[in-house]
Image (cartoon, rainbow, N blue to C red):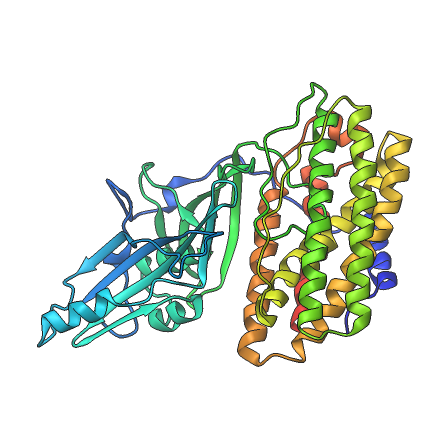
Length: 445
């Protein structure tokens, strides 16, 4: 049964009253737990340590840029080899034919990353030859089947990479054995969008489950603020001008609220395209109008504290398929928006500025309703998908949980915590700790 606005509000009240959960203070990454270096002079080089379920003669990790907003029939350039191991077509009886087949393999992939300001889109894939056969894997499910159990350090490094975790190269060993699998030293952030740069220790289990067991912020960026939905292709602009840290923070919030306007426009169009109940489409349209008001209110607050608000255009995005829409809804709505609503309730209680408290009371009420819509859509979408598709949606939610958990470790300026009532890292971690297990249980119900 999906959560409603009333049940979410009751949950939030309980979490805020008890301060559920806990948060441990991290002082640094213990490099002694790693005993293998899977980087070379040119960076990531882990394929030599990969042990697939069925042996291959040659393995190649490649990346190709997709040129967006073009009318060309083929938007892809030539693939770039990121790492390779073995002898291409080395066991083929007709090497020339095998190489020709390999060179003709498709480059488009479901493993997509963005760089720059959302205008650079890259597809990663894993290609291989085995005897006479050349093949390519362009999905995480395909790569997981290829690897089987994650039982080698290269398996762990490759699986972590396609799940969005980057190994730290150039600082010594980066992978180590663990009683429950393998641990990796990873770094994320510094993507041109103002995110924190964080180093983590992640645990990769034999079944492919990844959990973050330690995170340290090595460079603070602009906070995500956990505000609302983020649309496809959105990337925050430069820091807003202004000397007051409260004003700068509010300017970021206003920018994200404005982005949520476009996110709900996208969401509503996708719901309509997939013939969702009319009530869902109407609720998305109503949420879009709420976000217009939120953006205006937070923009006024930012100006009160001396900061203008940057404008970050959102490029047009194609409508997603049902599974992709459900995955995005799980990550952005069921995880981020639900926690964002909880944070808004906290600010409505503890912000020192009474005007901020009044604004956050409205935002908290609206965001709780938006989160409830996400859960209703999630429950509806599950009835239209098979078990493998539902598992993909759950993975998206789990990944969102881990990313959000990492973001909560970064402290903000003391004035932001005091004036705006933003939870301190320990409090945010406690609130999230009390919430996230329930999030996943609901998604898997």
